[in-house]
Image (tube, rainbow, N blue to C red; front, side):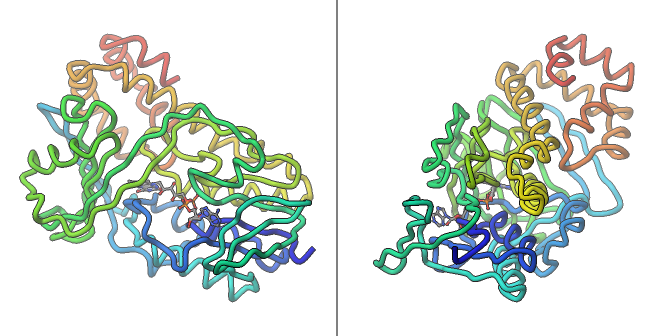
Length: 370
Ligand SMILES: Cc1cc2nc3c(=O)[nH]c(=O)nc-3n(C[C@H](O)[C@H](O)[C@H](O)COP(=O)(O)OP(=O)(O)OC[C@H]3O[C@@H](n4cnc5c(N)ncnc54)[C@H](O)[C@@H]3O)c2cc1C
């Protein structure tokens, strides 16, 4: 065997895992692209976890400390003194993590595509040539359409959605993100407006391309002021198994994505720590159990998504009335956790008045959230 661990895929999660395992294992990473970045991704990452994971500061483009939530007919605002989330540049994030990993001894094979396994070795395509690499463990960090997942026969019944994101020139409040929940405009998902600067924002949604242009018009942003357009996909659900023999899946390859917001970077990095622990113990089967926080988050998110898809806009307006009340905003401002939506929901439901109000809207909300 040439390596202890071969990581397939150099997105944020693969590169972060490489930097974590470096020094403890002989690690290699293969990435099919010739350079990093380029993926459709707004790059919003919870500030607390960003610091906890020691992610590179040079990737941070903007700091977000508040949010304005809009429905069809009302809005409310929550804010904190310190940044709750960062808006990052994906290319810098990935490249900085890769540089960190290389400095710690990881071998990188850029422009190298994993094709499959043959006799326990990874078959790779590199500049028109086929090469093979052997490792004790193989990790599929190769994204949503993971070839590694296919190679180990992992299956899913997840909901896959196309996502569209534009960078548009306009006037924005620099430290506030906007969230628009209007099922008349887009029945599939909310819209987000995430400022990069006062004069530039990333605007996106999942569902249809038409929806995003409808939204730009509503926001009085000119389609001709769009300076970048990207499309991508997410999957909400479970892909099983995460481990087969000496192969494990991580990040989007394992569908470690929040069905509430479509954020996947923090969940993938959280699971990188779980995977490192399992590898150090030489017991890959412990990996899934160690990711229980992520698994709970996905289960909650799937229930939340079902609830959202079952609600009409009038019901959403009634929920907004409750969440926009002074008491709810106070709970959100003091207790909401950017990456732990279960904790946030529990904090809201602990308040008798808010709980009673939501029961009046629909008892299903409570059944779903608890
Ligand atoms: C429109 C949109 C907006 C989003 N916004 C956010 C956000 O704000 N915050 C957030 O946390 N998440 C967001 N996400 C989700 C986020 O992009 C993913 O969860 C994240 O990219 C997962 O990282 P990853 O490393 O697991 O996979 P990826 O980023 O997909 O990286 C996989 C890597 O593997 C490589 N690869 C693929 N196949 C092979 C192969 N056969 N051989 C070798 N290499 C291979 C790819 O080239 C790629 O570099 C968004 C997604 C979309 C679509």
